[in-house]
Length: 89
Image 1 (cartoon, one colour):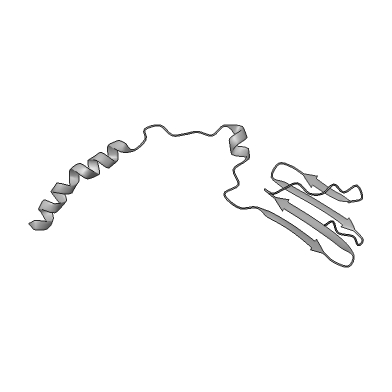
Image 2: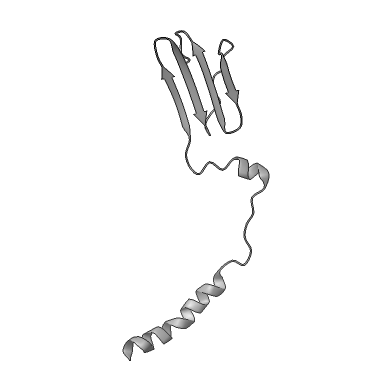
């Protein structure tokens, strides 16, 4: 009986929490959605003795490379790759 009375006494507080919930959702526009990264980013450089490759996902843009055979650039991902030594710093 004591537990039942405690539960009945807590009902007004739970009702107050339900009323306090926002009734309108906040929507992001297209520019804001383009910058959402879920809290992570990657910037990786792989170097071998015959080539190097750089990958950047949701991070700073890569260094400009005029000799690269592979250059992919977009808002969210960038990839550059080049044969030969001399990886960018």
